[in-house]
Image 1: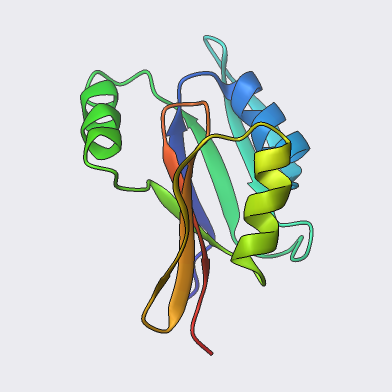
Image 2: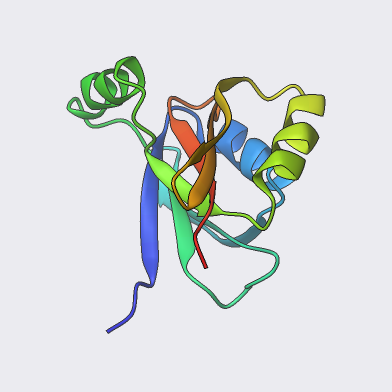
Length: 130
């Protein structure tokens, strides 16, 4: 068994696609109209184009906005991405105007930082322990 797709709720799929591709560097994998303006819209890592897909899922269900707001209020990231160098990625994203809620911080064997994806979520970048 392998993870094929995971999702993150987004307030605006087109805005999310721009952020996740143009800013974060992911690549669009699937874009299938579902009706009512919603799309099956996934992105993948440019480094692993056949790897796990991230579904940019519309946040239209009534439970989603309070759930997202509670996570953000408590500083809990909705998703976490692995990077080789948290400080370098922080500097790259910060230069692009990305707003961080937590600058790179070492916590035991890992280093992490948290930013706002502009689509209703906090995102964590982490350099896992080897």
